[in-house]
Each structure stands twice: as C-alpha cells, then as structure tokens.
Length: 170
Image (tube, rainbow, N blue to C red; front, side, top):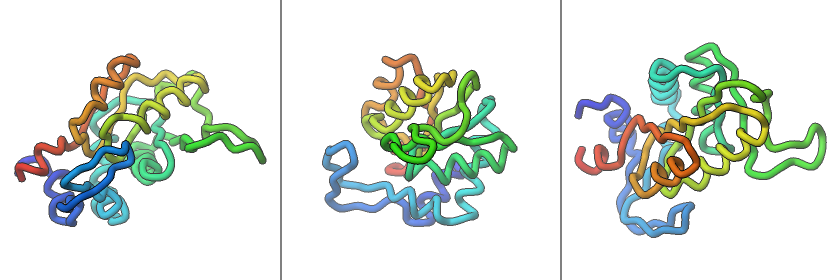
C-alpha cells in the first residue's frame, strides 16, 4: 500500500467488519474505528503532520469529540492555534459554540471520518457564523458516501488523507 496513513490505520486495526449502525443512521458492513488510531500518539502525530504539511491555513478547528485530538495534533505540528466546535451551544460561563477566536481567520476544518458530512456541515456553519473563512474540510477517512457532494453544495471542498476504497482494497 502506498498511502502511509492508510497503512497505519490498517496496522492498528482501525477497520472492523460486521454489522454496524453509523452516526448518520446508515447501516454498514464495516466500521472505521478512528479512535483506535487517534488514541495512539505515534499515529496521531503522523496524521497531524500530514495535515499540517498538506494545506495552508491560519487556524485549525475540529468538531467535538472525534476531531478535537486531530485539531490539536495539527496545531502542534504546524504551530498554529486551534479551535473546538461544540456539539451544542453552552449556556453558562462564556457560552457559545466555538472555543477559540476564529473571526476573520482562514480556518481549516478537520474531521476524523466523513460519511454523509453531517458533522462537517455543522462545523462549517458554526465556524462561518462566528466569522471564520472556511472552505476546506480535511478528513482522515472519507467513506465516499456523500460528504464530498454535501460540502460542495455549501461551497466547501472535502479533502481526504485516506479514501475508504483504499482501506477496503488494502
């Protein structure tokens, strides 16, 4: 296999076969357990470096919970700040949906796995509402199940470190 991130995902057992219900509600005969990779510091470091070296941005952001370690890894690899997009707005403390000042910044949104693109679309809308300039989402694994098209409808491109077809063929 040529893709080093795909190789790492396969070696750590991040793809499992069986019957699964995905976050999108869809059923699948395989599951990508990206947490098996992102909880491994060596693999997380490689993912962070690949994203940091691959794209230009002023700030990186991830939707809680799955994309936060990826955003942190990219931040550490690039030396640029990161932001967290909460799943829902907090009503106490400083409140808000976004942790970090994204207003006026070119933000790269990162994701762990994309299927329909629901989480990425939510993050995209929240970041834009907070004043960020965001038109790219980088995912570790694209399940190639509609996220690219859904994001394109919102004027954003989906870029993947690994396509699921690489994992299934590997």
